[in-house]
Length: 437
Image 1 (tube, rainbow, N blue to C red):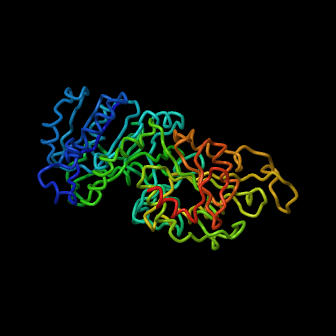
Image 2 (image 1 turned 180 degrees about the horizontal axis):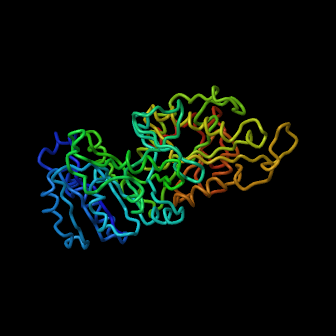
Image 3 (image 1 turned 120 degrees about the vertical axis):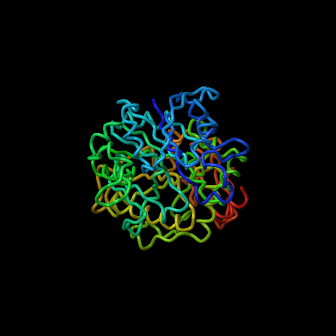
């Protein structure tokens, strides 16, 4: 599979630290970030690269040459006149062939199991797969809204009106693309880079707005949610954070080919204030200190994963859509404080019948309702989690039992000094995280 890397950005904000180096050549622990990415891709079997360059492109081409020193093949397209972040793709159309290719943005620092992403793309059978993830600033990021089957329903750019509450799912700038999409848009490749007689401006092509965003709602574009490491290092502060993450080993560790560690979190009474069966979104309120605790989990390298029993669905008291809105509120409130959840799993079942308005199809003995470990086992399968190195944290006996049944270490959040077996007892999630980290 070919890999196209867009490496033509100017890196204006980071230039105060590196005024004479193009952004892809900025060194992390003495090794240019783009070199680290090429090596990671090579080691996964990707060796055929096309690199689009522009600003200080000669330095990038001189450094990597034809790629032979790294054991790969690199061809270049040097944009003397900027063509937008997708203009070169139309000019390179014949070189790209007819098979899907990886399109990666060198402005991001990433370490991703791309073979896993490609398998997802092949299984879904779409034209485009977007790598999506939560981040710590969703309020000023473009958001991707997806259906249950991960088909992209809506693409909300920064300037678009967004709902009050939303899922923290952001496009990371990594894609699998089928070249067929170039034939679906009315863009004349011969005019790219020329001056439009009507506007007097150079004709450019914007990847997001002209190619990808129009596919939303078509059933032909899917999002691949992953907690793997993808960060923009466009500002000095973000660059220094990336440096710290490399030194701590967090960048490569988050690659899903490696075993992950998770903090499994109950919801009611652990993240939000306990109000009994939560049925009304207005009753959802974060516990003081929870956002800061989850931020520390995010920074630690552990995945932050919610696992929650929601029998209110089976009882007919809350719809799936209403539960989704409650969870969107949770993600929105956390995001405003710079925290995020890597995944949310919930059990909608309830074993006992006899409630007015209940949903009979959900009245069952299942494997996911805590204290059974089904949600934790599913998360472990989805994200390659080592359960023995993970924690289950909750405020109830069933949370502790589910953790024990899954093989996790456990913490009971309680104001009592009593313990449950070998389980540690803490007053709050914040207290536990402060002791751990």
